[in-house]
Image (cartoon, rainbow, N blue to C red; front, top):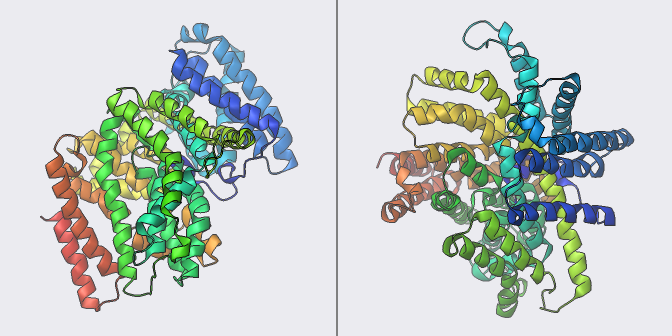
Length: 601
């Protein structure tokens, strides 16, 4: 379900196949019970729940995902020591809270340094080197920045205060972002794992084929709809490609679609799940924490831009139909009405319950998701024919527990490492200095600042997962954008969208790599098709700035819909200009007219 897995490198822990060994099933069940228990138990001190969150994550990444004998035995050692270190923090929470982040003995200093190193190594094993290297660079700046002359230096930080603030206080490793991972993100990860273990995925595919299978380009449009629905609960472009793509890509190839187009459609459609309400992956919940905006308002703000994204992909498929014979799905490949109705229940019941509890019941998203999880668990008793089976329930529940435990661990490792970076930015004032630099380079003009921010998001997003890229970029660029007049939520949505570019943009594009492997084509050719189809991912964030009413659906629906329709017309013209087989002068004219419609009127 989570946007953070989407940029994982191939072969990472995020990509591993769950192993249904009883020990991992039990550990997954403990992870699920712990996080669900926090919702119903009541307030738990941050220095108790957050260290336990990390402790539960360690075995999944350091032991289960170990690839060599050295990684395995060192993983066991680090896991045992890490659980002991986290246990020390949790058991001594009250005493440590009274130290206010100041270390007063050598043991605590060693413990703090070990926790920092453990966080870096866990993140490295989970998603590769880039994010830990960013964190190491931030730590090096904190330690040696006092020797840097000029405005980018800092006065220096006492080690006892610096290490203590990051490791034994309710900041740094155990800051508010980690709190979001513990209390919200983990719950929705569990929700996605439970739905995926049942028949929800088949329900998505069947509903999409019934709705779009008979249209021109039907197989590609089924991929768009099913990937949008599936991505809204998985949030991982790579996992989405692997799941829905296993069905849609062979279907497109069988109907004669060019292989590069088949891979590109699946990659770009799968990437959009991270921006599709109601779940939107981890980024939406981090946005709640960083902006103080209620989740329901963020969901409403993100709805029309997300629809525009998938509408642009849809229009791109129509444009490709002018160049290729994109036939509808064969009748025998489309699900019957009865099968659609039955399989749709497996996702409709939990989703309806989730939304009803949020909007009508007035409960928090995490509480509503917990109720929906229990409904999803009950549905695991039934297969696609609605046959009740205890054995089937046990098998599906075991799969859900292992998947949930593993994904919660990867997300936790990413967010805790990103929290380390945010802690350093706060302690050293580097974030404020970078913000000042952006304002200076842009000559305090909004559009140059937006382009600088977009470039930073694109570069950073190619190297670190989406949520981490968003958190780091918005921490340093967000204040600059708001200082230039952009409202905070719009600034955050702008950064979040551009942090997604790495899913389809070379040289690092995880979703494209997997789709290209599945279709047996050169990844760069697939990426070019994905970029053409996903051109909305590059334009819509800028269009939101030029037409800010499009995110105000909750407050001014008429103007929001008007702006959305205007943007849709412009995107349609640009999409046809980029893709359709027309005279060169006409294609250029379409692009220019589309840009004018979006940005000048």
